Image (cartoon, rainbow, N blue to C red; front, side):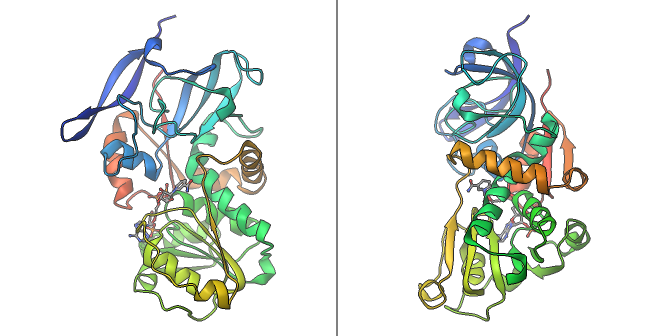
Length: 330
Ligand code: NDP
């Protein structure tokens, strides 16, 4: 069997980084005890940052981008995996400091892998991808906080994007009334098809937040940061909670302590990259149980490997809807 495989590789240049499609061999793989034939990957917001170099996501050069992948184990020295196992990888610095999913082959630590959840194909797992698995972590934080559907509405920002669309579908399937915030009103029907009961305009959350606003939401999932998150926090009901996972608007958080000390609001930070294995497995269980496959397929589009560089720019411009899956050429 040839040990050559196709890959995108980012190399360092004097003025930043450059991206090229190339043929690599097993000697280009990094350390690890499990080797995988990669079948599917996806495009997450962070992949857009890595592909374009818009933010210093890649910390080692040269590097294969792609923060997640699914595929089949071809060799393993790890006790939990053997040849033929189907596996999923999310995060752990893959596509940032360790070669990632935009390649026909990957070698990683078996400690980073989860077995493909029963009921999902390797394509489905990447339709979920890191964005969808992060959405599940966000939902779990609200559930663990004790928020029940009867407590009130849940707000989801960036709802037409990857995390937002899966969060909307999961929450509505769990019985919550979801209000979806979007800057793309033309996506209202799409968001309603995922279960959103109402749509709110992104612009309504854009101005500088007041310390406290009218209490509207039992909880929220926020992918935006910045003024959006500050406004969301100021509108959370007493003892409610927000899961904050993203910075699609901004890294800043221009808020005050008022919602925290006067209403007992809780802000949960969601980190999918280094989430412990038990939490990952719980997130995948939630997805298998509460994200209907027809909904997952309806929010997923398959794109070509060659389209990744252009799509990397588009996702940063907020032009990608739902989730994208990429078949990795064998
Ligand atoms: P997408 O680009 O698919 O979705 C982001 C969405 O945010 C857009 O579709 C858009 O939704 C909305 N948006 C874009 N720009 C702005 C803006 N200026 N103000 C408010 N909303 C905006 O990205 P992902 O869903 O993959 O990721 C979302 C965020 O979550 C990113 O910041 C990403 O880095 C982060 N993330 C964090 C993880 C973690 O472990 N903490 C893991 C995965 C993602 P609409 O058009 O509907 O308004």
